Image 1: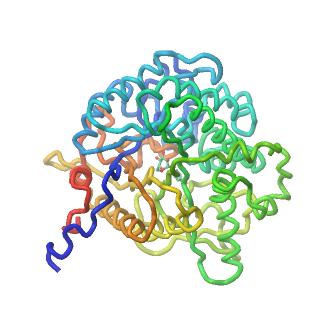
Image 2 (image 1 turned 90 degrees about the vertical axis):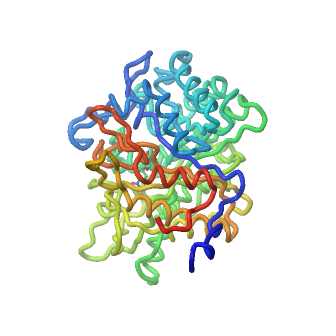
Length: 476
Ligand code: PNW
């Protein structure tokens, strides 16, 4: 069929948000500027052996100083929305007590610049940069951290509520709890399954208390949500033991958040799977109700599906799940499970490229939580980019990845999923956590020696999509 046959075939709903996303520690740098104190990621990245080649976010992409240039790049990309995170230790350096106005002023200036370019801000309160002071007091395994988080949420609501219309509380609490306190591949690098489960509960509680603080402090009509990295799971075979492996990973990967946040209770099977580790007595009687707050939508971060089975002789277990190398599992209570790499295309992260996982995940969410709007708050891919002799960056694999996922998203919407926007991860190359600067997810290439920004071919393609509201008929 010619272009006539397909023109308009992939048109997105009116008002659909076309965005890109970043996170404070991955882009800002300026870690000791204007009263900011260290976060757990400053400490972790300065600890030898934790991050690739000892990279840190000390300079990152210098966004704290270059934000005006970066907002211009967003405008060139045709973005109608931008998702960023607020650095807790920048606005409340000790993790408690009064706010630092200079820190808040940075976000006020950033948001004003966005609004001047007609780009709608979406602010994430917590993208993994816990003030080190709070980790020293016990971190997320302690209840007090959830209470501190709600106070911080109130500060941000007061400071930005007059100009930011959409907030999310936590980014990917699964990573915070289970990579941070379970497998230890993320900050603070602890490897204690009970601490990880306690962290999960106090992240849930922090979310619920923060939603309440945001609602109390924000003008009517402000939208409040959370971003979850839900794991789209496939059994290796239809054998009952492989379906059981899927159930276990779904419990500790997905329903540990979806249950309390959206249904008001922890799943019984999760409590049973982890009963040999903890009796969950850290969950107090009023907690499920505190966590179960109405949300305006749910943010979904999707990169790849996971194929799992019961562990068989000779299988490694948690090493093969794409979550970094650790002898310690990020799946407490689901020990005898193996992760499998399906054949086929992979990104530079080794993550498989499979947009049908996004389609399936959105179908599941639509069935399980009818009427709940969703935003794709992250989706994207790392590839080995290089600046060509003519000064351009050609990244056809990334463009194909994004296009294929947008086609899957379009199909999910056509089949009834209420998805209101899509945020590409990431606006620009940045500090990719344990991988340092070695993995590039950006639509915009950053030369780290000079901080020079160069939009990749994907950026130009995405600008066409964002401006027209539809996928161009030509394949890439
Ligand atoms: C997300 N996993 O991280 C984060 O929200 C971003 O900050 C990050 O840069 C991006 O995805 C790319 O990695 C993840 O192990 C880190 O499944 C690890 C996993 C998932 C998401």
